[in-house]
Image (cartoon, rainbow, N blue to C red):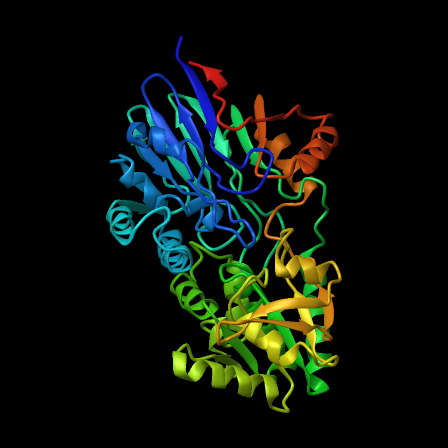
Length: 452
């Protein structure tokens, strides 16, 4: 009998280094291959992937975030000779993220030549178009509602249907109307559990609060700092601000890699990749792109001008909004802005994303006011943060009720929870017990999914 098995090399009962091998006696298909980002330490590779890279037929990438994609360039170095499959937007985004990671960590995991090998073997596809990944095995990428180009991966393995959700979002966001689900009955469901014990508020309610607070702060000639993830949350935040006419006269400065990701987003403003509702909103506002508004001001990235620009933005007497990296305040332009603006009690620091334990962002989120910054001249500096701290509970992942809906609608006989804290997963087990009995994978332990 030929069993289909799964081996997880990360992201079982934790978030980080998502990498899952589907395998039988003849085939090996790898779903994602990411790094685990650890605050103030070097990233961790998926443990064991190097040993099986030479056996893998194909690699399928759900989306560009480094915890799903960051180790992919190392696979060729360890003998992988197949193709990488992903959506068109993911290819453009992930290459920039790989280059950025190379700048941050150097050649610890892979080199520029490894990156070139990957890029030459990427095959792109649109949503809902089946493609062959091995003999008897096809795949289909399905809108995940998470970030631009993000996909669930549906595998048809000789008639057995396996759905890997990766990161999904059921909420309506500025660019997306939630995830899509396949019409077919699923045999095996691999489902994320990031928000396993959390109900995420409707996005529109949070948007109102953000806009009202931004208007109040800037009317009083103060600064609102919005550190944001370069991919996804920053574009959503900017769109939320762009579609508020009350903010048309407020300077909104955009700093860091966000500017590049905005340009990538503009390439894919069609109903293949974003919702028709969003495109209609743009049309009604007379915009081709939300980022073309006159009050949106990219901060120049030319090294000898950047610091002077940030200093001017921080110290002038205008009320303004600054949307910048990094989203968890671990580095990047936000440190300069905090150094220049953070000691003014009239300014506001607004959190728009989850803050991982151990990050500077989490320290501030939990109430610590004495923080250490990396200054523009490379030396650490301690400041006493006096700016007001505000929290906007956005999330790019489904609420626990959305996860339950996927389990119920899929009709899956076998369900496995991945990509979530153990505590979240224990909560889910109880929350869905009336409709499903999901299991939790063990890292590096092959688990039988089904027998062919």
